[in-house]
Amino acid sequence: MNLSVEELRFMYRNQEVLQDISCTVEPGEVVAVLGPNGVGKTTLLKCLNRILRPKSGAVYLGDENLLGLDTLELARRIGYVPQRVETGRLTAFDAVLIGRRPHIGWDITERDLKVVDAVFRRLSMNHLRLSYIDEMSGGELQKVAIARALVQEPRILLLDEPTSNLDLKNQVDILEIIAHIVREHGIAVVMTMHDLNQALRFGNRFIFLKDRRIFLYGRGDEITPGVIQSVYGIPVIIDTIGGQPVVVPVRGRTG
Amino acid sequence: MHFEDGLVPEDYLAYIRKKSLWIAGGVFLLLILFVISISVGAVAIPLAEVLQTLFGQNISHKWDTIIWNIRLPQALTAVVAGAGLAAAGVAMQSILRNPLGSPFTLGIANAGAFGAAFAVIVLGTGQMHSTVANAVTISNPYLTTVMAFIFCLAATAVILLISKVKGASPEVMVLTGVAISSLFTAGTMFLQYFASDAQLAAVVFWTFGDVSRASWPELALMAVIVTAGAVFFTANRWNYNAIDAGDETAKGLGVKVERVRNIGMVVGALVTAVVVSFLGVIGFVGLVCPHMARRIIGDDQRYLIPASCVMGCILLLAADTAARIIVSPYVLPVAVLTAFLGAPVFVYLLVRGYRR
Image (cartoon, rainbow over all chains, first blue to last red):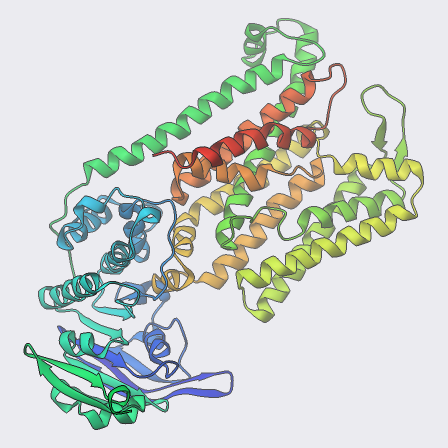
C-alpha cells in the first residue's frame, strides 16, 4: 500500500512552516528527507503521524485517510522513532514491550511477548534483552528505540535522525538493520538525515526541502551538485569512491 | 508487518516473576507490621490476642474497645493514606517527568494548610484544650476539613486552567505549583500573624499530619477515593510507561499525552486532597516511597505502582507505630516520624544503587 501525502500544509501559530507538500512513498522503499537545519524535516515527519496536526492536506495509506484515524489505530500503522530517547531503569525487553501499547488492552498477552521476542531475534540483539537501558551505549539504545517502533507492527516507519550521535560502525549497523527490515517486510521508511553520504548510500528516493516546500523529490541520479548548492547554500562536488557517490563541500578547499 | 515466529521468552518471565515476589514479600511484611502496630501503644496487647480479636473472638471487652475503636482504624488509616500518597507520588513523577514530583509538588498541601488556617482563624473553629493526649483540638473538625479540601481543589483548578491555556507541559505545571505553594504559604503566614495564641497553636497542630484523626466514616471515604485513584493509575500504567520513554515516543504510540497528564494530575490531586484534608500534611511518603520502590524493582510502572503503594503503607504504618512507642505515653504526630524513619533508609538505597 502506498503512502501518499497530498497538499500538506503546516502552520506554527501564524507562521507558514510547510506548504504544498505532496509525495508518494511505495512499500519497500527508504525515503530520506534532507535539507538544512530548521527547514522543517522533523515537522514533516510529525505531520505524517499527526503528532503535529497539519493545517490542511491529507495523508493516505492505500485509500485510508490517516489523519482521520483514532490515535491508537494510527499507531498500529505508523511507527515513529524520535531524535531523543529517554532512558530509565528498565530492561531492553520491557522498553521494547512498551511499543505494544497500541495493541494492549488491559494487559499484555502471550502474542505481545512473542512479537517482542521475534523482533529481538530479527535485529540480532537477543543478548541485550535483559540489560538495563540506562546502562546502554547510544548505539544500543537506538536499536532499542527502533525495535520498539517495529513491535508496533507498522506498515510505515518514521525515523528522525536515526544515526545522529552514533559512531561510524553504529551508523552503518543501524542503517543496514533498517534496509534489511524494509526489504524483508515490505514496509516503507521515511527518515530525516543530515549526513548526505549515508543518505545517498541507503536511501532509494530523496526529498530535499527548501523554503517550506519540496525542492526536489527524486532518485539518486537526479541529485546534482547544483541541487545541493541550491538547498544547502554551499558548493559541492559529487564523486564516486568505492562505487558509492560521495558529496564533498568545496568552499573550504578553494578558499 | 508481522512477526509470527517469536517464542514465549522464559528468561524474561523469570525476571518479572522476581518482581512479583518482591511485592508479595512487601505485602507479607506489611501484614506482620499491621498486627504489631495494633498490639503496641500505651496499653500493650499480646500479639496472639490481637489476632484472635481481629478474627472475631471476644477475648476481653477492653481489647475489643481499644482495637475496634482506636487501633484498627488508625492502622488502616496509615495503610490507606500511605498507599494513596505513594500512588499519587509515583503518578506525579511520571506525569511531570520529574524525579522530584510528589503529591505536594503542585502546592496542594500548602493550599490545604491555608484552608485549615482560614477555618481556624477566620471562621473560628480552633480552641485550646488541656488534655494529656492532645494539647489542642479543633472544635469543628468538619468545617476545617471541608475548607482544607476546598482550597486543595482550588489549587488544582488553577493549575488545570493554566495548563489548558499554556499546554500541559511539565515545566508549566511544576512552576505553577511552585507559585501556588508560595502564594498559599504567604497567605497562611498572613493569617497566622493576626491569630491568637490558641488559634496559632490549633493551626500548627492541624499541619502536623496525624493518622489518628480519622474514625471509621472518614476512613471509609478515604479508602474509596484512594482505591479508585490506585485503580485509575494502574489502568494507565502503559500510558505512564510510554510517557517515561519520552513525550514524542508516547505520542508515536498513540498516547494522548496532554490528556493523560491533565486527568492524571486531577486524580492525583483528589487523592492527595482527601488525605491532607482529613489527616493534615504528611510529607516524605509521596516523594520518597516511589524512589525506594524504584531502587528495588525498577521503573516499569506495572510493578512500580503496586510496589510504591506497599512501600507507602509500610513506611507510614511503621512511622505511626514508632510515634506511639517512642515517647510513650505521649503520642507524636506521624508526620514528624516519616522523615526520621524514611530518610536513613532512602539514603542507604541511594548509596547502594539499583538492585541488579
